[in-house]
Length: 199
View 1 (cartoon, rainbow, N blue to C red):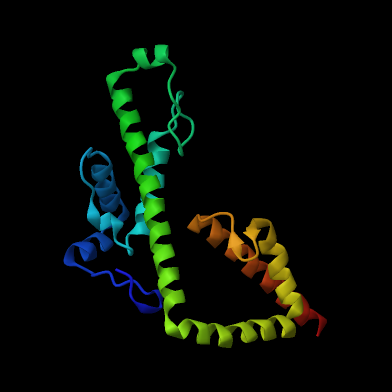
View 2 (view 1 turned 120 degrees about the horizontal axis):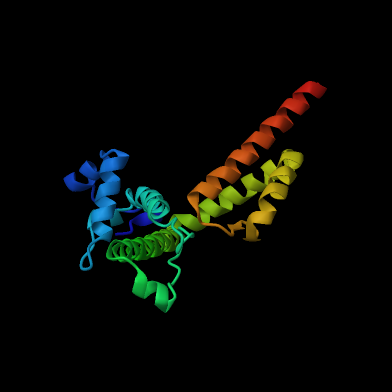
């Protein structure tokens, strides 16, 4: 449920706490069991605090199952030619079915995260305090850009190739965003060191 100012009100049940405390191997096994079920879903995996970890472990499992002569990609299931499908061994067919299920769960994970993000954004913008907050924040951004114009230009140069439009990134992948953030911070540190050396 969405709460005011875009904050999610999601109960932290004992079962959710148990899953959050699992190590990667235990959590991955739970993800695998969920993917192996044709009917029903593991609702705990859909909890907002679990979604990112679920995504990460789905990717680990896809990479473990996908690389074989017929399916090099770990993102999609490549259809087998009819003759190859007829010759496929039962264990390989079961592996492909499980991989297809992991791909499906990955798509569900992405839709859930997008729905949560959209709901939070709508709730935030509907909040009466949002407009007043924006009126305060925007001049602050403008002043920072004016005072630190060289740093601002550096950040813009690095982010521009990754945007569909100003402030909107092409990739929603958290790992890709973390990588870009690290690159920017490293460049800013180099810039700061260079400025310090001049003085």
